[in-house]
Length: 278
Image 1 (cartoon, one colour):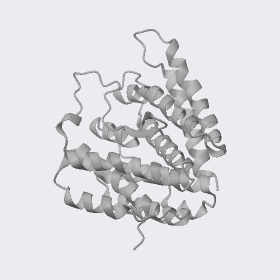
Image 2 (cartoon, rainbow, N blue to C red):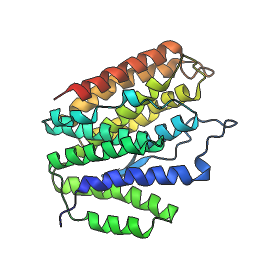
Image 3 (cartoon, helix red, strand yellow):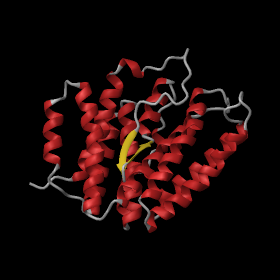
């Protein structure tokens, strides 16, 4: 029986939700500095290097813990998946849809999460991504449902296996597209969650922290250089230039209102570009 390889990327999303919601050390401590206290990187190995890629899951957990609103009206329309006809648009929007799946799961709207799970599977079908290695991961998940540490390990390994599989199939660029789509959607939902422009808000500070993680994502894409990735790199470098303004702030200023507005505008423009490409 053929197993959809991408189904196990989706399963890993649920594993991270489970482990994040049940780990005491992931509770927000308002008395400590929240900057860069990340628990959910995606470690991708390439050419002897390990890239810590930002996970939208970390942002969503942070939004939930800081009592940010659940923005159901800002999620990508799950019925629009059939509009995407190219490899690039399907893969980017797969990343966006799986981020929306994770967002719904973190905020406890499991009915919507099912919609996004089904949409993600349909896009995976249309990309023709099948492989049998998934049975082993499925069995390990099933045998370790009560073991949080094992689930974290399996989740991390699933990304490595997906990366290896895509490289063997000559489609390593797909993972970059998935990661970019997920990162853009995570940041989009974060900036849309901000009410008012209090630059001392922990959510705005967490958005500012994405500056360093964006650099890792760009470096990973450059390591996997191809025409599609080159287009993504240009998109992300435009946002990076806006983030780079933060380097000129004094030591007491993480981000200014103007800088936050500029970053938000760039992120919203890029997200709308990706969901409206066909």
